[in-house]
Length: 263
Image 1 (cartoon, rainbow, N blue to C red):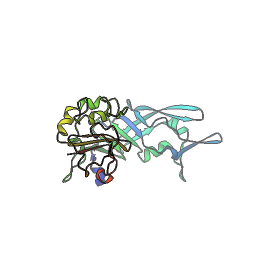
Image 2 (image 1 turned 90 degrees about the vertical axis):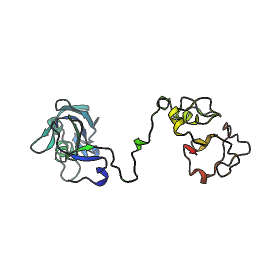
Image 3 (image 1 turned 30 degrees about the vertical axis):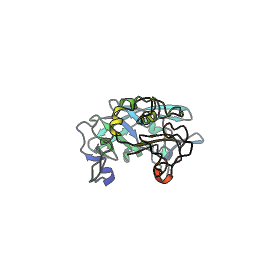
Image 4 (image 1 turned 90 degrees about the horizontal axis):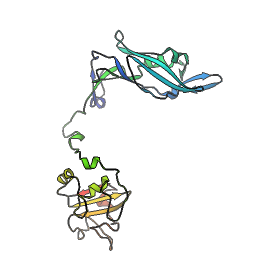
């Protein structure tokens, strides 16, 4: 078996781990495909959850039917002879949830025959899916590419921001908001931007913060009012406080960005 190029960027085929005992399982089934006859009614499968922690090869499967919530003890083990996992739950079999179609296969049989489960074994370094073990990996690099994490920076002030925007006033966003901390890159804001952010954007001459389609705060580091190619302003618009909304040429902005920095 060979993974597709796209999938291969994120995971590679792995050997069977030394200890394939399952510690977590996800039942990878479409519940709408299974139903059971209860009295005169046909009931569609309704599992309370499909992800389960497995302890010593045992976990509970809970479903809801006409009688309410029903819980069944299930066993999951690695079959070394067949190199696959095997789910056993006789009580669930007895409910006779059958797959739609001509064959009407029983739910547990479908899970086993098609290996419709994703398992994390005790090794924790691989994942079992589609009948094979895979080792997750960071996307492979190609010429000219980079990992997004390589250019992201963390900051304690941004991490502690209580919300994204908060109440908007004529002077901008609050200090405890993400937009407020970003807008603090401008010199006329009464609080400081995060140090890491100031270092990265030290050469920004023009900062535009916009909210829900209309610019609310414009902070130039220098007087740009004489540069119509950058900003077209209304006669009464104060660029340094953002008291009124500036009118921006769509061609210069390229849509409605949340943050626009120009150096």
